Length: 496
Image (cartoon, rainbow, N blue to C red; front, top):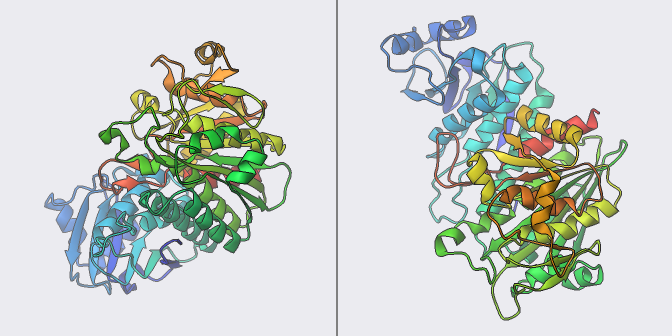
């Protein structure tokens, strides 16, 4: 599986002279900028007239199509609202570009051009990145197994920038980041009959090696030999054996950053069986691994000067006569014993082994991503990840990268009293606290026991990783959440 081949490029050609099936122009509320006024003059003042008539108010992601416009070479013009210039952000520009291209790609087009907006609130390079990655998101839909496509990716997306702007490096980053976002979304949207631990591991190996990344795939025998009892225990209820994917990118610099991603390719809940409704979207329970993997590929393609270790435990969580039972005790990689009191709290169990392995490798910092708890959505909704950490300084850097990328997270407390809920009478800890309060935090406190005091951040991405229904900027299904954040964090780490 590879990202959809869409060429992303830039041009300094006068926007009125750009030849394309569609030209997308972002409009802020209020007066047109001098550059847009000059462009509108080529259109005979069409944009000004439309706004004066009240047909387009430039509200966020508002769209208005002009077919067969006069005075420009593009066949069609699409206006997209950008709201107020003083409120612009990388996130709002990303969503505007995605909304516009989603509107366009319901039918086959060859070339789509987007006029990159200038605003004092966002650097021009960040605007280019937002429009480029947003356009790539909008060009790819979730219908990975449709016989008749509902979305048609254009052959080329062109970013139109003013003369004198050198944006080649930023456009290259946007192209690679857009490919990574598409890869993560495609993986999450893949049906579980196709994507299971063995096939996911095979795709990881093929794509990573093609990007110059060192790859190890541990099968079930290796996992047992290496003392990965937590992964093996959760996987034993399925006919699909577990895998552990270990990626190493050695770009240089001091220290090693580690990304760890939860890869439950389907979560039935095990013997603590989910209801039908709860199980419907559980192919997305590997979204943490998908994000970590896609970001790692992008970081290698960008040749960032960092060392990166990425660890992804891959399992199916299924009920059977062999499944782990309530009351069973599993021995993890670092020797801690885990009493299983809820087989539907399996993600933290497999991450225990993966985090312990990463800590053994003497990495300097760790970030793990997991669709871990429903509790985090009760607390923060569906658009914000819960962030937990054992190191406020590292948490601040990760939060800064997330915000810079245009995504969202909120830091939750990690006070010691939450540890009481994880004490077991028969083992070192239990995987489920037995009470409903603070569920996302107790999940984080469980994971903290396996990082050996290395600066670590846990991102509970259960809400943002999956969209129940489409919106202006997003398709229903896998969102590719936090791919952009992990790439941004790698840039921050490289510059430290």
